Image 1 (tube, rainbow, N blue to C red):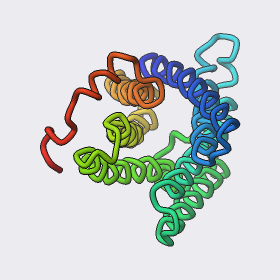
Image 2: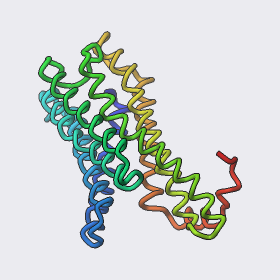
Image 3: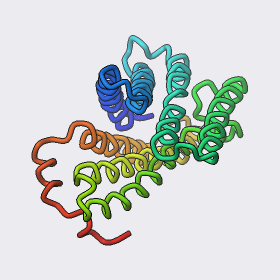
Length: 247
C-alpha cells in the first residue's frame, strides 16, 4: 500500500488496540461473552494493522514479505470473532447463522493457507484463485454484521416510539451497521488496488486514498459507538430517530 493507506492503517491499528483493550477490561468485570469476542477481534485487527505498517520504517523495510505474512496470520482470528459476535448477539439458536459462521471461517483459513503455499505470502495476488476464498472469508462477516445491525436499528426505532429503547442504544445499531458497511467497502477497494499492484508492482494514490478513507471513516463510527462525546450524546437524546425516512 501507499503512504495514504499506511497512515490510515497506522491510525486504525492504534484505535483497534485501544478499543480492544477497553472491551476486554469491561468483559473481565461483566463476564459477558460479546465484549470478550469484540475485544479480542479488535485486538487482533490492531496487531495486524501494526504489522502491516512496520515495513514503512527503514529498520523493518527488509522484512516486508515476512511482516506482511505475519499481518495476514494475525488478522485471521478477527473476522471469525466478529462473526461469532454477530451469531451470538443477533442470531442465537439460528442454524443458518452457524453455517454462515463456519463457511466464512473455512473460506478464510483455507484461502489463506493455500494462497501462501502457492507462493503468495503477502496476499496481494488476485490472479491466485485462493485469494478469493480468503477475501470472501474476511469480507462476509462485516457485511453480515452490517445487515443484522440495520435490521435491529429498524426494530429499535419502533421501540423508541414506545419508550422501550433508549435513543443512544438505537443509534448505536445504526453506527455499527455503518461500521460494517465501511469495512466491507474497504475490502471491495482492495480488489482494484491489488489488481493494479499485481500488474504494475506499485500501489496507486486513488485506491490508497479510498481505502484509507473507508478505514478512517469506520474508525469514526467506532469512536461514536464506544467513546461517544458528551455533545454527541446530547444531540442523539434530542433527536427523534423516527423522523428520518422510514426504511
